Image 1: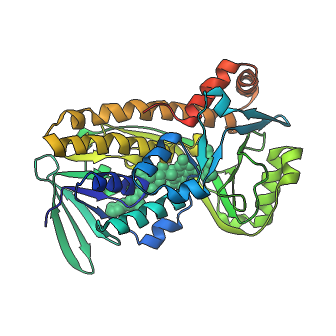
Image 2 (image 1 turned 60 degrees about the vertical axis):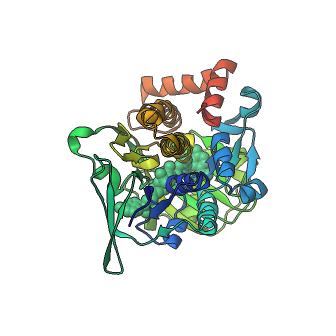
Image 3 (image 1 turned 45 degrees about the vertical axis):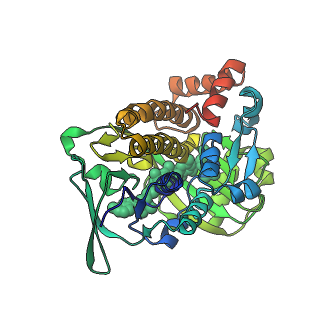
Length: 390
Ligand code: FAS
Ligand code: PHB
């Protein structure tokens, strides 16, 4: 069997790429290891940059996001018992972010793909990539005991950090850069109203905390925790107590507690693979890079990769040009590394590290004090948070 582009992974990267290529008349097949329900069960990102919002609308699946998403023009940073607002829209000349969960983005993209009639194979086992260093790459997989093969013009590796695509690249052809943080995030989803109208990022001696949301009736909270933390050691009551201890008095009393409907621990790492192209294999999203979620960049970097890759593949199919495909990796990595820097900076500034004693502790406090004493420093934070230009 043959198609133009095989997309591995039915997460935001793969589905968004599939939609944009389909709308340009390019045939794609998405291969996903898990079931549709499993993919939708994962609770991840919550904040969309305007560029991501624009791409979701260009993909033709933005209606529910526009109806249900919350446009935010600021967020807060709490430290030393005080809360400070970052007025991102005022600081960036009118730009904002959209609070709309990744789960909902994925659901909208899945529904859009179903409506387009473009095929997705869920529960595709043993996906394997072949001959992507030549003009006719192939992908094989097993489904219900039958082995299938697709010949294509290009493979998009959108299969996340643990996917098969990056793992299929010869070791000598790829270089990786990584920083693993000595802590994780314990996240709770609960059907309780948010404790504040905007997100609150809290830096505290006990550790970082984040108050986010999915709607005006559903909240998403995180506390920094040891990287090997066991979920079973965290009752809901223990979580709510720890969260409130890190928020400062005013926000703490505003927290509405309730039963968790999801509770998980995510490790934090910074990771980049270079390059992002190997012959006819193109990596996009978490398959190529990971950021600590502090800066809300993971999903949004996946979106900018997809912008660049879809443009390049469309140009190639339309006029045979290799120019944009040749530029893809360098163009994507230029934005990736700036988001890696911002996510590392925000994580370092707001989290408690083992070495944060004495001099380092004073430097971190000075970083926060400087931030809220300088419009230039706040403007820099704001322009990164809303998303640097594509
Ligand atoms: P994804 O990992 O979402 O999707 C990859 C898909 O490929 C998956 O469905 C997987 O099942 C499939 N796949 C893997 N191997 C395969 C194979 N061999 N064959 C076929 N399919 C295969 N970002 C934020 O901005 N804010 C957050 O708060 C945040 N929290 C996160 C929490 C966790 C636990 C994780 C892991 C990530 C978080 N992220 C967050 C980042 C996250 O949102 C990613 O950036 C986003 O999911 C990237 O999307 P994809 O590149 O599509 O990768
Ligand atoms: C979330 O709502 O899950 C979220 C929001 C902002 C972040 C990270 C996670 O920086």
